[in-house]
Length: 176
Image 1 (cartoon, rainbow, N blue to C red):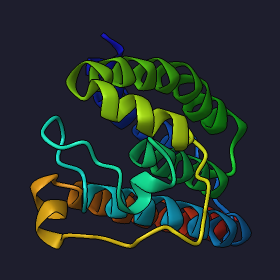
Image 2: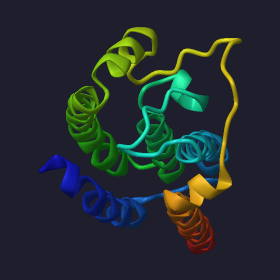
Image 3: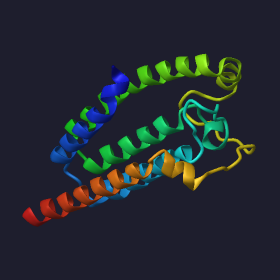
Image 4: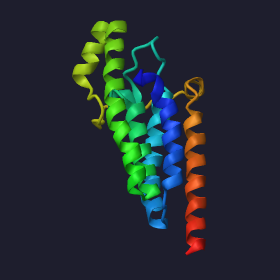
């Protein structure tokens, strides 16, 4: 159930956050790099994962078992900072803190069924959420895989939200 509602809920919450947003120049400048790093993390993950067919342990998957969700968390935090509104922050962080842990646990059970021994070994050596950076991490990325995973939708959403927040900043500034 949570797996199915998280994406539509995300779009709904994004619209509500943009409505309540009260961006400032400082909030945009502070939140933008956080969101950007989240987007890059997601892109790097989408460029290597082949869902349900291969046990992905390379690239950013060597740093965290959930780089897509970690990237999403950074994106969410970045946009919460840029919105500069307490209601927006609660509307993003509360559902994120409730839904994603349950989704992660469900997906881990699924991976353990698909890749039993390989997943167990991976689980023992790689943290669930927060990345552990090490010198041995090997960069790998396939633009074709990135496109196959349709991660460009994140870029489009990122750009759209940034444009709306910037326009809202200028409109709020002009009305003062």
